[in-house]
Image 1: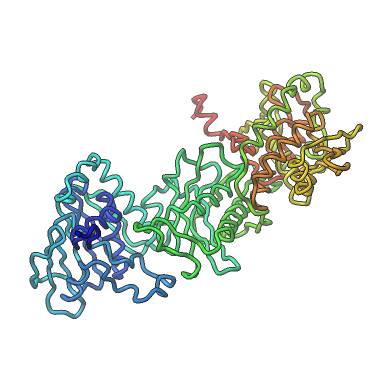
Image 2 (image 1 turned 90 degrees about the horizontal axis):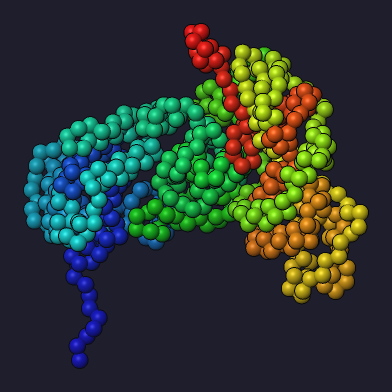
Length: 607
């Protein structure tokens, strides 16, 4: 009887491994550059021809290898970086699997030239299709140079799936940018078809390296952060202010212990920090590093090492989201009464913020409640409760529409110094003068942010302000809904609902949030209960509640097209001066637009 199971030939096994490790030329560059960094290189030169199809050459001035190591490094699972399973949870290197070089050699023509410091001569090893063909002594400087020619020459099926030369080189440039951002102390150069494409000299700080690679204008508008957690983690780097956003996550660079990763936990935490600060489908630009004890993170999750697994994902998530949110709040622009405040109106990025560490003079803000994933369907459910909103606004006077503590103008606030309200344009925009600047303010967006911040403070204080119903409403439920309501009574109270069991499967609704008095209360309560039932952590509950607060604020604020008196306009601007995140509404839309005197005079050809 013939055997069906057999051991694969070594060369075939390497080619299969190459399918996991070597996806495209950029994968080769990533593995070779990471090896150079592990070899303590301070200079890395990358030469590319035809998008990596013809040639990939990576040269470094690292420690180099002896003849024996040069031969062993082409054997599968040969590595100098780990020796036992315990080492997997104490990693301080970029690579550790010992798969990269043999996998690359199995699908290309590879020439390895290296010299160990102290050796009289170097060694050159030539391998083709995974087989070593030549080994000879050569004269070469200390370090290692790896040439990879004719990638996928022996696997034409994979070679034909490569994209255009420009596309493949773009991926290579992106990989090298990620690596260069993580190591400002290493000089990196990239050439393509003999032409210099990228050259980053050694820099003293991350801000300098980021400016060289991403652009000085972008980095000039970024904030710096350096925070340490109670569990030994440290978050540092640069991230954009709310006014600096992108349509994709292409400029969201995240690193764990110096390794670039595309981790869902990190990205979700960062986006949660910007919740209510960015519009939908807009993403921040950031270069953020998370350093934590190696035993708290598992990097042995995927062959490409782009994914990691944290021992306590919730802890890491909340630390990042809270640190970024606090930093954003700390530099949130306000209208102060100090001289020249108008020139700094809602300035998102103070001068000099790109230096590592917190800005001097910025007060530490109170850390908000843990953040999590908000529920989109809550907003959709609430929309149906406000179909009469425009009708009500038409018959209620302007001052009367500002009902409830959450939206009433606060007379305690005064208009900032050097500020003057000129008037109202189209009953929708306030025209103001701040020093020598002309400022346009969207009255609905401004009041929406004011109301939202008041509601959120109430939420964080324990519960949203409620209003008792003149006639309590009886709600009869089935057995499953009744059980759910019993479990959610505390969360309903935080919303501003007062619900009491009334015997059996019946509940009594005695109070509702002040801003939702005229809604279909029973339907609202049922839908909110259904959404809260899907939330499985306190952080997600808070996020869902904040989403509801956004809808409340939107429907209870001053409307576009609503006439305001001069005192109301002044009160609105004064209140705007006393809140955090005053540059955008809870949905991320901008509140104001500033025009300098120079811009105005240039428009009228006075300059």
